[in-house]
Image (cartoon, rainbow, N blue to C red; front, side, top):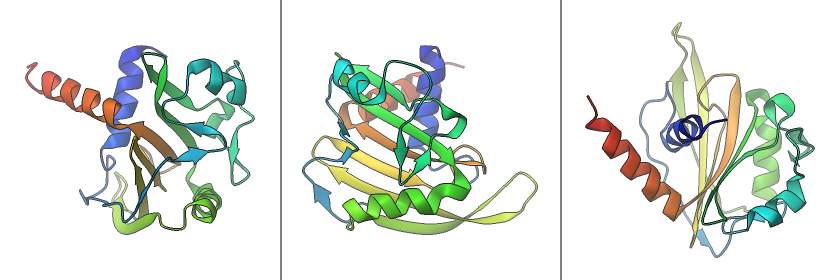
Length: 173
């Protein structure tokens, strides 16, 4: 996966989704560190690979839900420190993922809204967010498609980098 493709995925994950009405989710509680199965922002790539393995095939699960497509979550690093972690899952498996997240972080705040697909069918979107001193975690029932959801960790540094790149691209006409 090339850098442009990864940044496009990050930009899509940071936004509210392709079909969602723009609705901001405000975290209701700050925690010192967000950690998912030993993975947290700021880890080195070696530490992340020790948990995930160094292959494309994934055995990583959240709430016994595996990744969509069976591949390892996407990770990005700034100066060899984990700056984003993107776990994609099938949207029907959202309840298993959010149940596991809530068992560890009951203070996560979720908002429900309506999203529509291209044919106009309405679906109930659930967007959850939690912040930490280093960044945030979002969990969404529907990500860039109606078939996949995601859990996304992003550092404040990566949020700013993504924002600046989006601003730069907006002037490139």
